[in-house]
Figure 1 (cartoon, rainbow, N blue to C red):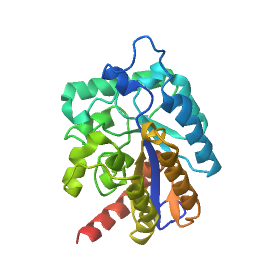
Figure 2 (figure 1 turned 90 degrees about the vertical axis):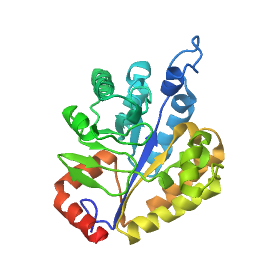
Figure 3 (figure 1 turned 90 degrees about the horizontal axis):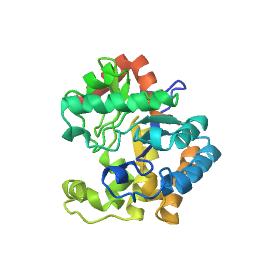
Figure 4 (figure 1 turned 180 degrees about the vertical axis):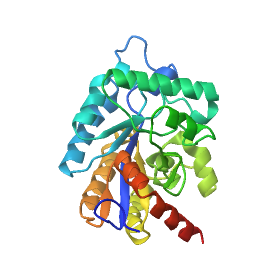
Length: 277
């Protein structure tokens, strides 16, 4: 099935998870005497990201902790002004699946109140920790959101909510983040870190897989990892350049893909049934 308004063979969404010092503050790791808004992902990585995205004419989705709307609103406005989407990733990266129903509802209310004050209206949510919950669709829909992006396989539309999932193998942190050892053990049988070469090999295949299998792939990059070395940032930049030559791939924000999916929900459901037959 073709993807997007120009009937491309596949679709790819570039997304970025985590921003600023939100999680560090929540964990008590940010020095109390250090000003907020000075995290290297905001000061060093974001300007470089925006520059290379613009140079390659790509719009991306930033899943940010909404705490940043109070602590560093200028960065979020800069993302939007550069043509990118700001979506939600919790308040301070609270693991979504570990909260009660009421806590999840409170988190959403707090997130949307903060972003509203800086004139940003998120459409989507990615649960910190990657796992959805039985009440997610109801809570997100009641909050006015139109899509979520948990771990999963197929793009689905149900009850007015688009599920735009990511695969763990399409996440840079799977290969490079020590704390994801449990996921590596589940997928590979060992907790050992992978290499940048392993991550680059995955990216080398993503475009072909999206094209050959008519897939929508949601890639996740973490600015805090990208800022740790020039080599990590170069892997991303090189991928962007390859993506720019893929004329048969629709590269879009999650909001754009979600909106299109809702307009083509019947065709998506038919494709899923065909793929599962």
